[in-house]
Image (cartoon, rainbow, N blue to C red; front, side):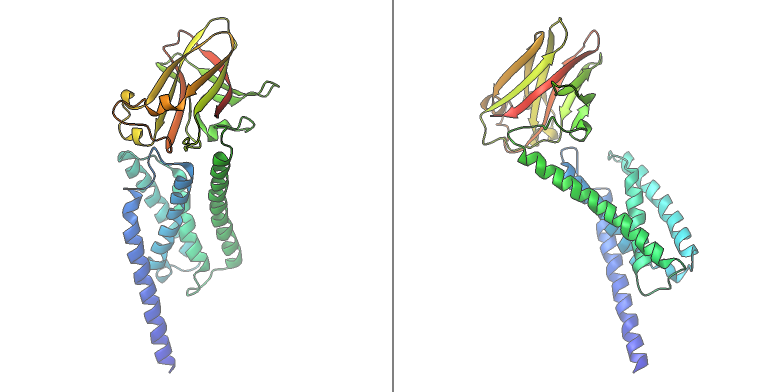
Amino acid sequence: MLASTATKGAQTRQRLRSLALLGAFLITPLLFIGGPDYSSGPLLRSVWNLGHIGLFALFTLGIQPWRWFRGWRLWFAPTAILLALGLAIETIQSGLGRDMDWHDVLRNLIGMWLVLAWFPSRPTPAGGRVLKLSTALLAALELASTATVALQQFQVHQQLPQLYDFTRSDPSLFWRGQVSKVDDASGGLSIHMGTETYSGATLQNLAGDWRDYQQLILSLYNPEQAPLQMTIRIHDVAHEDNNRYSDRFNQRLLLATGDNRFVIPLDTIREAPESRDMDMGRIRRLGLFATHLPRPRTVILKELRLQ
């Protein structure tokens, strides 16, 4: 009876190991192909990144390093191996045109550490409770980060018709470029432009469904006496497959001294692509930039909303 029970237990563990390895090998190609791209939003990226934890938890269950290592060597040896492997994976990914993310290396380790700390069918080293608590905390922090991104994206869509909340303290979560919050009573967002060919800021995290609105309204403050010519650029998700000038909306904005307010009909934006209508339900980015400035300039964006 005892022998039969032991045999069944061994068979169950072997099936678990086989399923874990199968799952890991099926998921592994996604490290190099598929997944979020340039046009993907922050939430998809954050959720996708959690896959590193699951993948390397499966690998650890399948390989079962406790068959060869005991005590603290069970932690040191696999950690060193996976650290080297993670660095190699990130290097290979950069060669395939994908961004290197050293945080992914930590996520790989968290997946392995969770199994080493919590898998019940292996000896637990001294300090096992501390290891369990530490690994659970690391995993919880990753989940909390994704939850924070989800809440942020919910707020982005709830703030319509405003396209950006100027009360936010860190615009870098939403904008790319040299931007900073203006802290005086006038408020707004400071956009600094240099002398490079194209210089400005791009709102890349915004509510993309503009179908229920008719106009885009923006206000820019030019603090200098000299006028400034800028361009507003808007495109949808489909445009990011080709990036052609004729496939997006571009409009010149001439800024006089002081406040400048512009009202742009959304029909004009929709009809801007040469061979198609822009998808007003999937707007992806809005950029404000100047070209070939003879010297650095700064403008203040004070209003950006739909109507």
